Amino acid sequence: MPTRKRKSLVIVYTGNGKGKTTAALGIVLRAWGRGQAVVFLSFMKTTTSNYGEERATRKLGIEMIALGGGFTWLSKDLERDKALAQRCWERCKEKLASGQYDVVVLDEITYPLSFGWLDIDEVLEVLRRRPKDTHVVITGRDAPQALIDFADLVTEMREVKHPFQQGIKAQPGIDF
Amino acid sequence: MPTRKRKSLVIVYTGNGKGKTTAALGIVLRAWGRGQAVVFLSFMKTTTSNYGEERATRKLGIEMIALGGGFTWLSKDLERDKALAQRCWERCKEKLASGQYDVVVLDEITYPLSFGWLDIDEVLEVLRRRPKDTHVVITGRDAPQALIDFADLVTEMREVKHPFQQGIKAQPGIDF
Image (tube, rainbow over all chains, first blue to last red; front, side, top):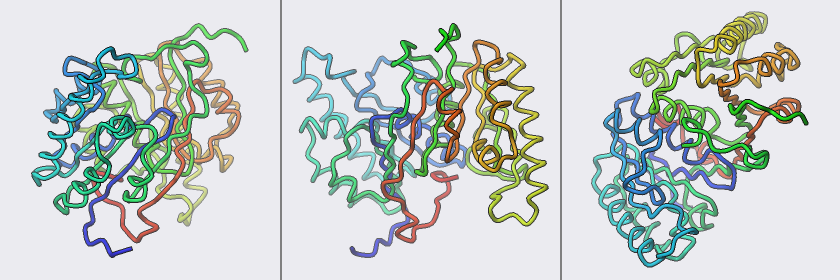
């Protein structure tokens, strides 16, 4: 493996447990606390969603770009979702190439990768060419092996116990 | 198992991978975004630490109480650390009983539990008696089985790949 001169990291939070997007938000908070520039791009949230994280980032002046089609496995229009994912990826490429950010979050990008809507080789190439000081945080289930191989830090969030199993609903402030 | 009437959750992030405290911070951000009251109590951070999360919570007006003795396995004075942990737990009890918070984070409380400095039965009893609307987030490696059994949501952060393996140091804004 070649020596990597950059110090910035590609961090992947994957697995079927809860806490992936949440951990990405924790990094956003830390980075913001240090005055770093952050952008959060979401492949699942829609432009109209207004969750706790959106309200928080808006109040903090952190850029959040939500270009997803919602929960795609419920979608009636996959072509639209595919086009949205590709549009979101175009924005990611701009942001990654810009050199303006200390941290770029690609939230739930693994889904369009799994569906074959984005090309993993292209994504890795864009990550490889990014400015050397830009950290990247990637979340979502089923991260492709090539992404895991490429990343510097990979954590699998493993579900041990989930409240939905007990009939408890998602809670505002906690889950969204 | 008796029916739990409360809707609030006890959430545990455990395991040896990265992202446990980070996910707790993500919940802090979401809850703050919704205008909820949050307190973050840390069993490891010291009163003088000034990490990204401390700078952020200070700027946001979120209460952070750091009463840990630092990294105890390097400590020269375990009796002091034990006393600090017990002092921190006293504060946790006050906060949990107060009913003033939507979210109480007990960051890295599993360590004093593992060391036998706190009594797990007492901790569970305090959690059981808390006001019904207070969510609790608990982080740290090696969560005791009794805590896992008690919790509503448990995620194990499993280390797949760690940058320290490659000689890359912890990064400000990302790790702390």
